[in-house]
Length: 477
Image (cartoon, rainbow, N blue to C red; front, side, top):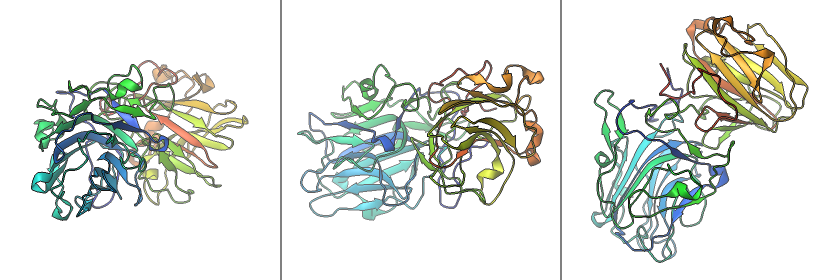
């Protein structure tokens, strides 16, 4: 099934889901830019200040509109701004920055845009300042084509001891410009400028670039962060390289609910519960007649519907297959006026089009829930007060959809009833989409609604019905 990511010229799409074999990853760490989440470490021993390699798998969340740098990895200033080295996104391009006592080259390493919210990108930043060159790769392709941004021969603060704090997810020379998205499989090698073949390989069956375990020497300040130790928030930053170069975790959470940041969203198809997950599509253009655009945050799992009098939608990146059974949740907060959750025909996620919607309308003020759609038969009602967790269970084997409010299915629905479709709110999803089109997860609201989507990359508030799967690439037919 398609992953509805970015559209438009000059954009680069990463990998939606990799083969179900080989070296399989288990966890990623969600960086919530709105919560100022970042990692930090202050080296206690000086390593090589001119030569290093940073390798990481990155899935972007909130995109930037220019001027909002999204820092991946950086070292701080030594005097004034001298000594800074950094790699980051700006205007959806990859940038590097090197500050010295002389030249201070900074800017895009190449012209390409990286704005696919459904994709994982493997980024390698290999620096050899002693020879005034760097190599930046994305998915095994060299993208650093502009020599005007190469690093001068200089001893940067990278790998320097004596109080020089390095950061991932924000800039090290004054905490700001926070990254929003996911990272996993972070390898840093002190003293070597390596190629992507040290960290990945091409899958001979699919032609896709996939991760492999790094087998070389890490060097003095090298580290490996798989983010797999979830004993506490502090252990999320544990170094598994053998060097004990553990990172301090700042503003991350393991508290159950919408702030939980240890995710099973990864770039490998590891299992039914660990793969590349559906998120909100932050590149979608508003359909004709809809209101101001939704603001996306928390690595594309939160949609803030603007404080205006017209609806603003949020769509998922993975279309529902036309078979199988699928479950997800939308946690509604700040809901004093009506909104909706459900599915939308995929054409509505494209500019200047409309299509069918199958939705549960709610009123958080307690005036009840109704069911509506374009051309469907409505059924049932349910009342709840205040905020709620709304569950959506789509049985695409039988074309039925069920809705739950705080774990209780409306209309006495039985999602496991199969062909009898007991209590299903709508029963003809397979025939209702014009031209056999696809259905997308959808929610919408206005006047400050906050919708927190959960497709299973973190624990559900309520258990999925038996036989229902999460929306990720492992589970797609």
